[in-house]
Length: 247
Image (cartoon, rainbow, N blue to C red; front, side, top):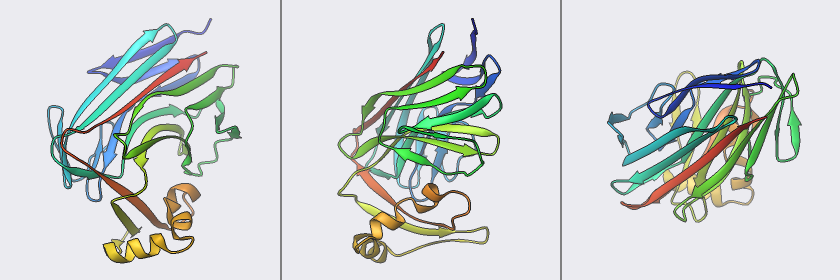
């Protein structure tokens, strides 16, 4: 029987392996138009005081917990509370797996090989899977969600570099409060004025074409896309919970 090994420190999974499959540095992310919060990489324009985070467009309190539930399950829970009124483009639980010893990923009834496409295969589903070379399966289930009426749950499967990445993600629902239409490259990042972004978004086919365009099409797409944001009032809470099953 293949055993699950995991190292959890300060409520975060730092590393683990299941047979030949290795994984780790799991965490949480959220962002507005100027700030990016992450527990596993480098933050941008955000400051932290214990579990409180000051972003450019809001002040938030994060509760994040990782627990080993059984011999073959790990559970993650995240709650993001608005301390002041603020806007967000997303809130995410992030799981990362080394691609070696994984033959394919599955989401929304489709199977994918790792090609370093960097595509965000984003779907409003509750399950994503990774298939191991030795017949093992890792199943990530989204089992707790509260979007405070302003955000809806998604999972995505992404093949990037030497990793498979699975996100449980809360994204804004209509009617959205802001549209951030941006173009980024290695020299600069440019954003359309709010009125123009809203006009293009509301044009026939505008939303369908530009909604997270770069994410959907992968690394060969120019860094241009429309990103909706919604406002939360002070005291409102976003909740996400996932369980990772190793079989």
